[in-house]
Image 1 (tube, rainbow, N blue to C red):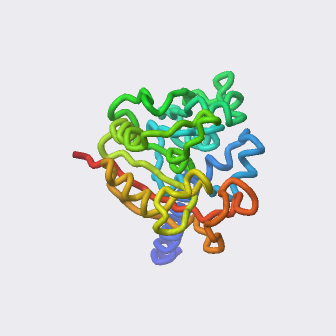
Image 2: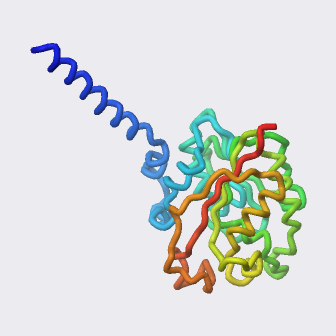
Length: 253
């Protein structure tokens, strides 16, 4: 075998090997493909695109992550697989979210996800320690902070106070992932209580006003066909809303 052929063969092996390793190392796809995930979660994957969402956020093994208003823990379970045994996931709900959501007790029962902790706390005092999380995930819940429905156990929320608590709980340099249903431009928080949507630019300014620095946006969950004038959690919009995805960072100093 000539030296030229040998060099080419080694180079080809390295290229193929590197490509395979990169694919094999994709912890996000691996989390979605994890054996034992509930069937209801699998049905949700097509519309939520969780691998793309969590890859965009840059969640890594060993991180401490807050799944804020985690509901039934769909993302908490995926985060559990991604952060691994050296990481920790706090699945945080208020009582109203706990009562409304089904499935979360089974998800964490019998130490099924040993690195996931469920906790119930109200917005006035979330009980979060300063500088305690590497990342915070808020998926389709931010608009609910502007929803008011006392009959559903949901009084008016001091949104600024909530965002301040989240900012303090994030480590310097830590990230916050925000995903929500898009309202029409220039509508602010007006549609939060009726259509369960919120204006993207309003959201960005809201977080920036409370110490979060905008990093980047993604179009992975966009749907240009959504007219943004229907209730996000009911048909025909259910599963077909235009959603914005933003990443913020807490300044390191």
